[in-house]
Length: 436
Ligand SMILES: Cc1ncc(COP(=O)(O)O)c(C=O)c1O
Image (cartoon, rainbow, N blue to C red; front, side):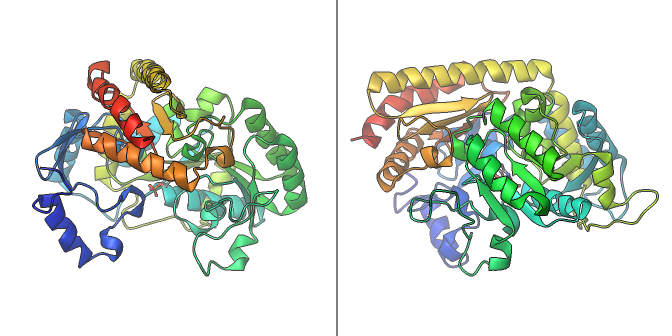
């Protein structure tokens, strides 16, 4: 039975949700019209909905589940910890194991502090940059998603309705204070001259330049090497810190995106994969900067502490997942990613529709247009293109393939090409329905 059928169990759950949640949902990013299938379980690359349909899950909960669902070794680590207790008001060895593993992998991670989410990691990193520099402004790239913190969310909602020649500090919600908007310089990705000009104007007030080196809202297309190098150089020259948001991009290599692209940021925000499927975030970076969180000599200048921070369930799940992610696992993900993008591109070619696929490593994104993507504006979908994407997503879902609503896909180590055949088989029909 189809999940939208009036007799489906998904439908009855949706009807209940309408009485409880605004908009019937608790997470608008993954919501779809009229309502999505409700899930009952997941295992490996598959999820099963409450009506018993099995889908190939290419979302991995938006990049979290790099080993797929319910990995036995991650589950065993969680089960073992459950017996010992879930959270304490004193530290545990579990936090040292995961923290030590992460710092051991990335040279720029001289010190690390856990948070509960990626949004919190970004917010805490920006706070640390402000405290360290004694300055308040931040710069960030137009349209890119950095989570739900106010400061980091300015400029996310850029659209043709509000974009001028230079990117604007657009509010994320009505009533967002001007005092916050004024704190943010929004930069056009990969435009070196404009970025230099815009940053020079902010120069001695700038605390941080916040960058996702391969943002979803640029189709997981990495920023150009000369652009990343310019940001590194400009931040050094102006005395601002370079803050990488690797909440997703950390999955691009054994030493994260920074290892892959050869750039050492001052601070890095992490999340998603490092918690093995449990809630997590972290800020890591230069020892002198991280001293704002306190050290043997001085008390913390910046608050970064929470009831669930470094809870041992997230720590052991993260350690299990990250230990599985050795160089061989990255090689395998890299190879699968290349194959998937190539197969999708050739299916799009055969369908002769104006679509394209972009991405890097284990990330891919299907677009409802064939413009060259070099920044958020060229990625941005018109109303018609948004409708095409909606139909493509819906058709794939009906054929039991789950992508993110904007066409993003995240591969997992448990996936093989044979699993992906379900996507390759479904795509021709989805493209013809989308572009009909
Ligand atoms: C690049 C990036 N930064 C930050 C976040 C926020 O992470 P969280 O949802 O854990 O708060 C996300 C979430 O999708 C993200 O993709």
